[in-house]
Length: 82
Image: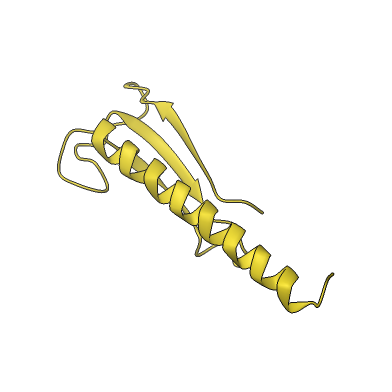
């Protein structure tokens, strides 16, 4: 499974976070991050974040996706595929 992150706006009637889960700013979004892999319980995160930290999560997603691509290329090269 490929890494993914999903964002949603806060529902002020149901969501009542006071701070971003990543920093100490006021949260703007609800997020869910799934890195993929076999152990979904430890690689699935969700919470609330501010706009600045949403950008950081997207940058991490880009990094995680590029690492997965490198691993796949390494795996294919290790199989002796010509």
